[in-house]
Image (cartoon, rainbow, N blue to C red):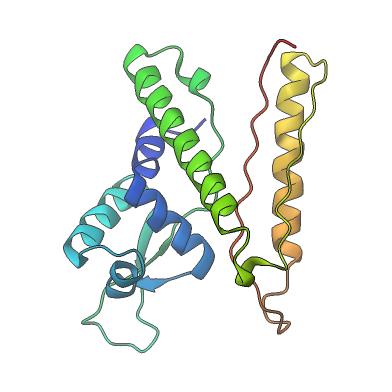
Length: 182
């Protein structure tokens, strides 16, 4: 189970963008993060320290050896949690539900941006996917599905050879599985 401090740290909108950038591009300099994410260096530094306190990022050595610059990298990859993990603490449960709402808003916003850009010639070769189904499952079977999806995603990520010369763009995958009614 994730610590609530990790979840609340990552689910701030700018901190989530920092996390995603470092996930995709690896160690980065604060000024590069600020320029890429259209934010002030001081703001990026503040949010990196918040992520550092939660154990999500850590300082990295400057690849050129210049000690005057501030570089950061992820200390861990991926988060898996449920608001139900915090049922024993009403305060933590409240924070987890808000982080969950923030995460869902971010997922929907990204999906909407994709639909707005779908006609963009730079995206013409990409066919975004939509997969959905309804099935019967027990709580254990639903947890098993989540674990299998996570394993499949990690295997898929690790199978991509980023040095093979192909041009790539970041892609976002999200899935939700939950009890429902027809």
